[in-house]
Image (cartoon, rainbow, N blue to C red; front, top):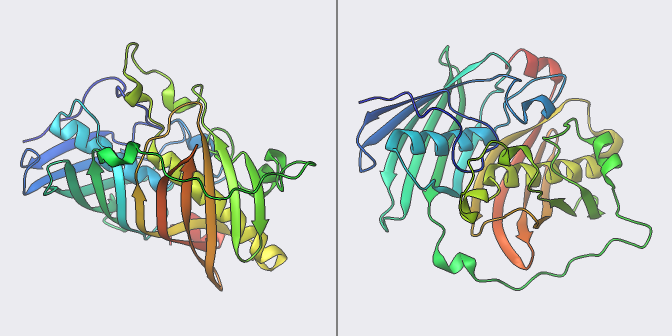
Length: 317
């Protein structure tokens, strides 16, 4: 049983079309379902031109978006599932312009019937492993809509934020529309950073959507929420290492225990709190939370980032 996917854009907000071809290899969403998808990395895609402009590379979080889109197409879902949890993700090799990425996903229904557990092996066309993913996709629990208490939040000093947008551009090698941090409100090098990102209805992820959609279809993609958190983590690492950080490419290496519990829509402001747990040579271990208005909408137990020499990345090692 197979299919090539639907024509035209998805009827929900996405950062890019993260699948070029989709094949349902077994099952129809029940136990034993297997889905295969293919994505060719190209700078012509939205968001890609701003991701390491001198080194075109697929952001690792877009593999998560690809798993979601493949499920929608393979199973013919009318209501797109949300990314609920990244139980684990190991990023093994960079995905550069021209690479053809194959994703083989084993899909099992959740016991509560509210979605699917997915284990995916991601490889380049030549068989080189690039990632292993274990994720949970489905509906948010009803309790996720209930507001929680807001944490103490440091206000910017009268003179302005610790890092304004111009300073962030000087530090991060990403550009519009992939630069997803607006301001750093506070930073304690070696310990913690607080940063914000305003979500606007004019962002590329909302372009091309059909008219007449319900408000839930304008939920800001959770892959972009996590990418914004990851960029905040990079800023904390840079602030902590200072001149001692060798020149290279800061890359996501692993995620464990990232749990989402609420949606973000245009007009909201994301607030990231990232803590540096350990910094060992060229590897940083971090954790934190993401807030929107007065709600905590995500918790990240562990994010591992590495600093890799540019030459090693270009040679795909």
